[in-house]
Length: 196
Image (cartoon, rainbow, N blue to C red):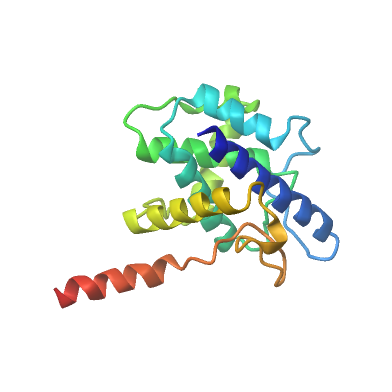
């Protein structure tokens, strides 16, 4: 699990730094996820803190990653950067834990873990859910696809070189984004089911 945390934090750090550089040439909207300053805690330390105190299942971190990908796809003017990555992380993990796990902590607890107020955590959750259009279900096929990608990348390229990763797209504004089309894989599954 620590390898996954290290890999995800490395990936998110590089994506955030890249988007920080590109924010001058690409307009970005400011949202509730943006802090006034860049947090002093590193992304890796923050993710380790969430892992240590959230007590959520390991699957939550993969699903949180899927959620971040969906969020950035649906909110192209809000790429992950150093001002919003921490709030997006705590929110995506909390939402994943609530959706997946039978037992999870409340928003006040996640707010303390994330170093923000409960009121802010509540606003972040609502904005995140609307930003994803409440598309929370992750099919087993999608979960396997993301897990396979993460495992392959962890084995082949630790730490991630964002410029070569399929998560990094230079068209328009670079942001976290996988090349997986969930709608396409769902349609293929439906066709297979109909054929049977």
